[in-house]
Amino acid sequence: MAGNLGLLARLRLRHLRADARFLLFAVGTDIDEDRGFLERTYQLYLALIFAAALALSWAQVIDLVEGLRAALGPAAAGWLASTLLVLVPAVTVLAWGVGGLRETPLRLAAPDIAWIARAVRPEELLVVQLAGSAATTLAAGALGGTALAALGGMPLPTGAVATALALLTARLFVLDTVLSRSAAEPHRRRALTLAAGAVVACTGAGLAAASGFLAALVPNVLTPYALCVTLLADLLLLGGAVNAAGRANMAFVVDDNELYAARRSLRFLALVDAGAYKEACRRRRARLSRRARRTWRFRPGRLAPVSHALASLARRPSSLAGLLAWGALVVPAGALVMAARPGLGVLASWLFAAVLALREPLELGHVFREDCRNRLVRSLLPFGRLELLALDALPALVVTLVASALAGGLAAAAVGANPAFVVLLCCAFDVLLALSCGLDDPAAPVRLGSVLLTSFSFGAVALVAVGLASLLGAAPALACAALLAVLLARALR
Image (tube, rainbow, N blue to C red; front, side, top):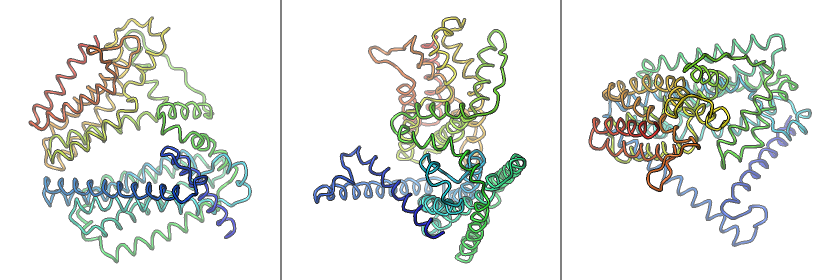
């Protein structure tokens, strides 16, 4: 086993080196070919620049978090940090659990399937892969823990270690739970998958529901003794995961890795064209699906586009991730920042992140864009652009509005902001973003003078405009968002 572990470890390092070599082509160097003194000096210079930029960027994040603590007050900030320390493992348990139940956590790329799947045991794969993922998990937990420690006013090492161990425990717990699917007999696999899903859902939802109660216990639990006990529990969970992986059926593991192998072969496409990467993965997933698709009967009249949009949402459950990312995270965070007004730096950081997220087409307008691309069907639809957009986006917009209202209202109540204003601003943002998708119709471009308006350009300008208006107060921000929505609706008519 030690020989295979060393072989797998060296193979993983070679993969990482190949990925680094590919990425470094963007800055004009090749770590394998450029081995001279000047070339190595340039590569060292790039590494130092990257490390300095990362350190300075994280220092800026810590400074913004400390400013947020000063704006909220020590008591509210401490409670928020303790709550987030409980919510982070709850969310990761749900996310990792769903991923592990959809695809086996024993990952194999296409060359691994062809060459090493028969030569190594599944527990050896798990140990090597877990070593790499555990390092990433601990690093991410340590960085996030320092931010939570700065928010809660606790020592930075304590927060970093506690968050890192919480994430590692969540990862090992999920592995112990979902690996039963890879080891089950075919006739028992569905039942064990449902049981593992129930365990993951109950654990994640239970932690999230009890986060308010557990937050009061966090300051008393963060002791060296408790951290040592958590580390011992992680060792027990690790032993259980290795034992569960040892019973895995390699034939099932190879078959279940087909989609992952296809995604991995296209992974660098995501850096160039995220939309093309997602579409390629969707088509590959549709080809691999063995389930017969249901024939949907669309309703007549104006309900036809709505039923079409509902069918698209049901057939593409992955689109819910994009809707919830905006509806439950990005939009409520922006509304809360504008309501609490912690400072210009926090607002600028949110605007930067939101504009970067707008580079990918919004899921709110997916059905509308597909209808507009189909010129034969679009010419026969008896709807104007604004009406078709409203009908096509209605199901996705309802999901986004509900998520924004719940997340925004709960977050506002937690930090002492005005929940009504936060919910109204969230709804205004959602409607504004949905209307901006109407600018993606290639048959009817909207121009402002000589400038062609797109969903990205208008969305970015609108977010910045509402953000600047929020510096004057809550009412101007809401009025600015409503005015922009009305003007855009008139332009789309």
